[in-house]
Image (cartoon, rainbow, N blue to C red; front, side):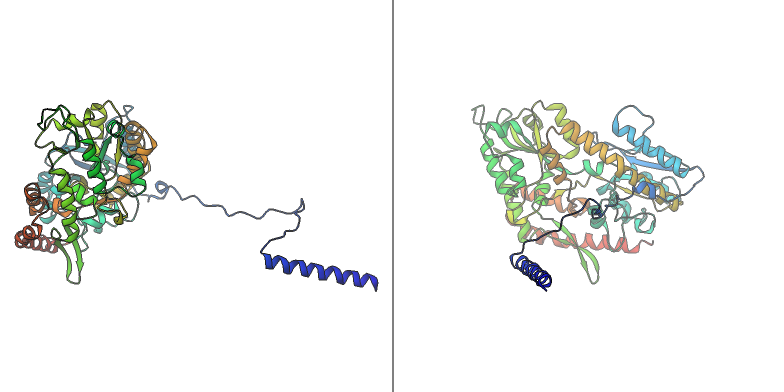
Amino acid sequence: MKRLLIILLCLLLLVSCSEKTAETGTETSAPVSSTDEPAAQPVEEEEPDPLTLLPEADFGGAEYHILGDVNSDWWIISLNSEEVNGEIINDTVFERNAFVEEKYNVDVTSEETTAAVGLVSRSVKSGGDDYSMVWERINALIPAAQSGHLKNLYRIEEFDFSAPWWDGDSVEALTINGKLFFACNDINVHTIEGCSAMYFSKTVVRDRQLENPYEVVREYRWTLDKMAEAMEAAAADTNGDGIRNEGDNYGLVTGIGQYLSLINGAGERLVILEHTADGDTFTLNVASEGVIGAVEKVCAMLNEKNLTVIVNDNNWGYNAFYTDMSLYYIMQLGSVVGLRNNMENDFGVIPFPMKTEEQGYYTTSMEATAQAMCVPVSAAALDMIGTVTEAMAVYSDRYLIDAYYETTLKGKIARDKDTNEMLDILTGTRTFDYSTCYGSWGVYSSLLTHMQAKGGADLASFAARQEKLFSKQVQKTIEAYAEIED
């Protein structure tokens, strides 16, 4: 009996301790013996290498002929390589093309030209099957697309536009009423080089005791107003002659095309694509409150001759940044190599400023002269073209972009991890503005003349004058696309 009472008391104590543990939220655990097996931890499965998932095919030695535009001396064209020479991009391109040649039994050949659109037009009109893949500037491809000379890429079933080796920003922006005649992917690194970019002189930042640009960007305080303040602090009549000339300090060196880069960076587009119940259409957005506000801020900086040097008017402006006589410099990302070759002191790269802190994101303007790929409508072997092109893009995403971005751009150009971080932000989200893609509409060229003369004033009147011509051009474009049979 006594033994039974002791057992009951022990059980009551255990229940009491359990209740107190539940009340206090503390946990108790039993000692683990040496024979207990530890709980199995879930193993994260690695994603398979997409190169191992490529389909099998044998195209019997067919020629895969690439046509590439070479209209600029600063572009890196990563389409073909004749032999290995120790240069990483060249060698990676050689290895990529050799990979697809072996895997699919094709012969990869290439042709460089400054008249790609003309050659494609001639080939299509003659019914020729001359080119498998063509790379050309976006604004040059628009007329070719409207003429019905380019294949709707959505009809090439091997293309996976949701995959990371395709530039999703370009696919979304360049799709009109379900048709996509050209787009960007990782085969050609010019998709990266074609981004506008903003550079700053670390020497000027230090000498003028300005805020660390990297920290301003990270804290999302990098706005057009912040940029204007820094430019004011950097500019000075250094040589004391009272004349704006080569011997003075400036806030910015840039070209006339970069008005748009700053407007786009502020989250605005001059022309937008709208999806309506009646189909896609373009809308002139110049008179919107957002664009007017951005244009006013941008013009206040770029039209002030004591703050900004426009190199189209004064070519010596390039040297102003090279010699740390300007705080900022805006040009294509591909021009960074020229900066490194001509500039002794360190510079940094940052994204474009937001309009206000409320914007909350950074975006980069894609130059209309950036290249995109297309397939002539007369190309015959679409299964071969689709399979080989997709494989080249997969390989490029796996190796070429790393070679360019990590080794060439970051490794040789950037000298610190901050710049690497900024490059990731800069190339992360890209804006395609139809005002320059469809340059024949004259929207940006007309607006540029207005902005340089009147700044942000009278934009509503400007838009009203442009609207009739703009509407005609849009209707012509939409009708041309609609008449193209897949």
